[in-house]
Length: 557
Image (cartoon, rainbow, N blue to C red):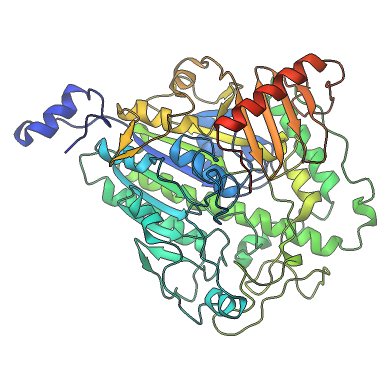
């Protein structure tokens, strides 16, 4: 039975459909598909200035709307928590990672004060499905002697977290994907179907392809129902480890031999020509690593290969999205489906090789082959196969986040500003549109509720729910603009930020001074104005602290 706390007055056609099956009228509310990439660079896509082959996402951009000031929460699990709940991450219990630190903002799972998009849309009459990376359940940690064989699939210790925190316990009718964050793309850990562990995968398995196939099956099944559907597709690509099919790597094997400076300059020129940032594009920030010029890089062969594998992973993800788009077309659902595509954070600077095996990184494969973590960039251990565990590192990360500075986990725009594409033929007024309207992932809940003609609940299943943050993006789709949010807030591991109109206040880390930027004139955050506007800085710091206290940032662990 539909609950009054969840549903507003639905359209007359929907009520008739619910009350009298003999007078069924089609439910014309749009389907909603949210697609999330993992650690994607801001300029990786062709439609955002990249050289990687992404024709399917470029098609969505051409026929829809691209955003240039849309923000995430700077890292995997906090962003996913916000997307699913419409709250800031600390309010949802995931201010850092998925370990319980015993503080309200750092419980490591979606806490009892939250309601998910799937729960609200399901009560509003939508079919709900999810494929891919969950990463918002509390992580079960074992002693190393047990953890490593568990990760390598040679021992089984049961559920990967409390199953009451699995997607199917939080509103999703169907789920196929990984509960934890990091995966071996050829044999993923923490893979489940519904709540059942997937015990083994076929020999030619590659996870991005499995996400593609499952997404298409869900659309096929949902399209047979009169009800609209909500599908959340959470890719792991291109998050490390750098693992790709060799035929995809082959396309890019020579493309990055010119190095990160060359790539960065070429992407910047394409951004200038694209009109993404209007007549006053952001300047290209000075290179952050003067001692790491490509011409003096002794590891250039290894590094060029690493970037080629990253590109291959993005390419394969785009192929997967093409399969999903094709199924939406085949079933006649595409025109009345809102597709939202974004990344959970900027490109990753991390070099997981230095961590070695443990926690979420297996030291061997299921069949006993050693997995290498090359701290030294050995050309005999090049990225790409299942047996090498590596990342692209800070130089490439900074380059592929062009035109911004920094990367994943930092509150500069290189860490938090995502390429965001909205595609909805029946609902977006102008195709190939570019929006500079500021937005944040907390806006997704409000957007979906408006589409579903549903109301955000004050209580859900007897639990009191924290009030919604954010506002709907529908006015932007329909008119190109909306009232800007008064503030946008960030905090992650001591990296802090606050946006107020054109002003952005940033603290790189706990040891750094606050910096102030005028984003109307300086989107690349190159000129710190803190000394020129001390009163504004003081006022914004006070506001940041006020919000931090109200959003469960404090007490920190």
